[in-house]
Length: 135
Image (cartoon, rainbow, N blue to C red):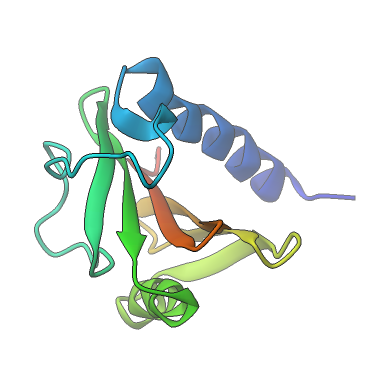
């Protein structure tokens, strides 16, 4: 049985991950067809974003955002998770799925991040959904 925090995190992740498509971003394009976009407005300047090419971005309300970054390989995906952990984000749930699609729910006491690492064909993607934690 899932605890309340994990269930809430999954619900938030579902809402935030759907936002780029609903906002008309390039998230619906196949990765090989996607065009580079700017990072979303409001992203904290010190937030560790994976090294790669942003292909989707959306600002969610006044303080949340999501973005998808293509990265070089599975090691670069793992580095995205490692960078969040090194920056003080603590995991509160994960779903390792089938290996081609992994989801992590993390927070640093102030902000919550859902990180999705997925691969499609030979394209490696890192999806971030970021929101301040409600107090």
